[in-house]
Structures are given as C-alpha cells and as structure tokens.
Figure 1 (cartoon, rainbow, N blue to C red):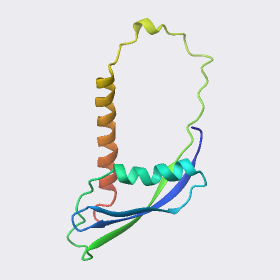
Figure 2 (spheres, rainbow, N blue to C red):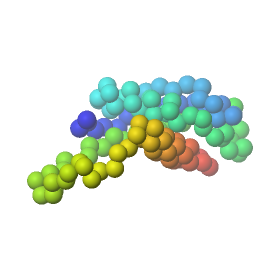
Figure 3 (cartoon, rainbow, N blue to C red):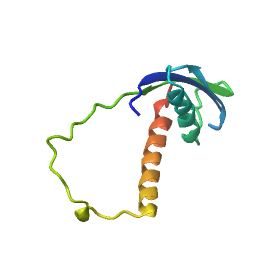
Length: 116
C-alpha cells in the first residue's frame, strides 16, 4: 500500500516454543504496519522449542520487522498481453500456493533465533 517503516515487536515463548505474549514495542509510525507486525508473529506459530542451552523457562525476543516500500514499476514499455493466453487458476490452487508461501515465511521466522 505504499507504506514503509520498521516496527519492533516483543514476544515471549515458553520452554516448548508456545507463544505466551506478543506486543508492539516500538511503532513504525503507520498503524496498519504496526498491526501487521504483531499479526506476523501470531501467524508464525508454532515456534520451535528454544535450545536446551537457554536455562530460562521463558525466552523473550525483540524483533524489528522492516516493511519496505516497493519501487514503482512503469508499464509504459511493457508489451500488451491478452488475458486469453493466461492459465486459469482456481481458488483452491491459489489457496494452496498461498499456504506454501506462508509455510516458507514461517520456516524463515523459526530459523531466525536458532542458537541465540
């Protein structure tokens, strides 16, 4: 939506990796981005258990989530395409592809703090 900023989220995991709490620590200055930052952590569940080297019963993490504005693309020099040649994608196929992308994002988030 053309917005950018960095929001810091603090969240706490128990020994099994269960999310105990999750809240905005530092605002990005854009309410929609702040809400999404907290939602990202909620969607990343379940988390892996913290490493055994961490003695605490709870693991507190502070994570900056950076939302970058994507550069505007000019469509001036792009060739015109006919939609007749585009493959038709069902809602089920789209949902499956989105689930795969969500799984990739969740795996990435889970790997961030390994060995912290």
